[in-house]
Amino acid sequence: MEFDLEVDAIGMNCPLPILRTKKALATMQSGQILKVKATDSGAATDFPAFAKQTGNELLSSTTEGDVLVFFLKRR
Image 1: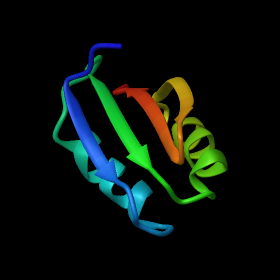
Image 2: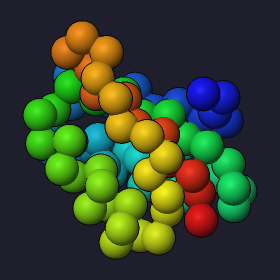
Image 3: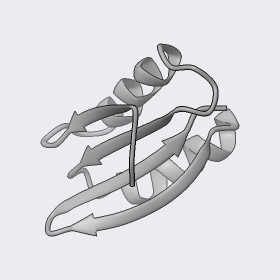
Image 4: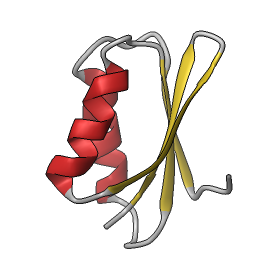
């Protein structure tokens, strides 16, 4: 999937992946796509909840080895 910005949160524990994502989304235009890579096991539940709470769209959530990969569309 094509994306406009990427956040590498590999090795970071909660809440850092969400905080980095929030900061990145604040710099983006509406409709742009953010890719987030994380290894924190809690991210699997944190990102869907974050997207719902903030109104940003979670386009996909996949796993590549030990890395969780999320694509969010800026509201």
